[in-house]
Image (cartoon, rainbow, N blue to C red):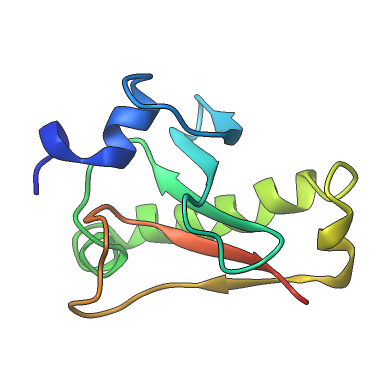
Length: 113
């Protein structure tokens, strides 16, 4: 899958609808709501650039991978006042290996239930 047929790239370019929780132009990353939530809060932290997986991002650009993790944490903490379900904490989750429903680097943020 290339950036031309990637749902996340289309969302970031405004070509597909999605609930964008937070968008950071300086960091070139966003938090978006999952289309198939597994909890009260299920967001995805994604970089603007197309990278096929978080594993590929870590291998190709370790600094950018670390920035994605830091962004996921910081951007989620910034939302705590607006999303009470985060008061009980949250989990960061990544898929490693062949399981990718959408081939784009992402970190899942899930509220603790």
